[in-house]
Image (spheres, rainbow, N blue to C red):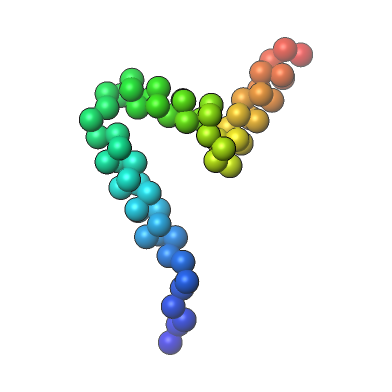
Length: 64
């Protein structure tokens, strides 16, 4: 018998995706892109911070 997991990452992923789908269902593709870009620029989320760091490195490398 297996132990019950304290955290179900698949259920969490599905819940997050459902939330995002609900928030974005009435938006045009351009509005979705704008909203995603705004989130990437302003969010304190680790993924957004990583994206900003990578973008900064890319711009720095392009200058040299």
